[in-house]
Image (cartoon, rainbow, N blue to C red; front, top):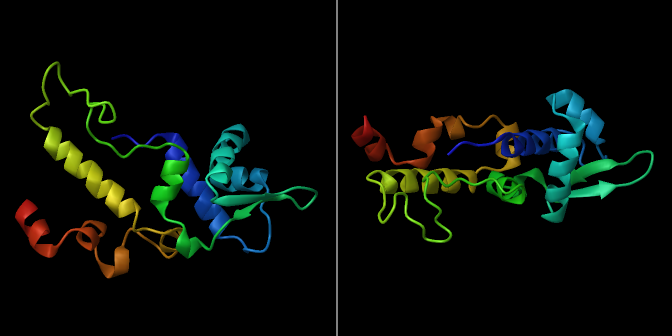
Amino acid sequence: MELNTKGRYAVMAMADLASQRASDATPLPAIAERQQISIAYLEQIFIRLRRAGLVESARGRAGGYRLARPAAEIVIADIMSAVEEDTRMTRCRGEDGAPCLPGHRCLTHNLWEALGAQIAGFLSTVTLKDVLDGLPAHRGRPAVEAFISPSEVRTAR
């Protein structure tokens, strides 16, 4: 899996928005400047975020965007999904069942499939509020241990 800039920038922009006063609309140029993201690219991202119901837009002189829900209720997986970012790690196309290699799965298919599932599961547990509070040091534990039992971590070492 390789997260593209769209997914990373969407999360960065949403975290920026979450760090602002909830009652105020934040103009995209302000987010673009703080996060060093092209305004044109942000416009494309925010169209998708708005369609997904993650942000609301406000028109006029004090216009911009605000979160549609509290930061504690928006998980990173929802943001990634809104901008069509995929967490699948396999090189095969899972949606149509096409195998990794002609006629069969590659030897490491199950490894990459399990990793993709771990990433998707992790992103579905992390909220924007968590990000603002300093994740990935999740509740005082390394990010991997927050998600995998200590016995699994020891086994992997």
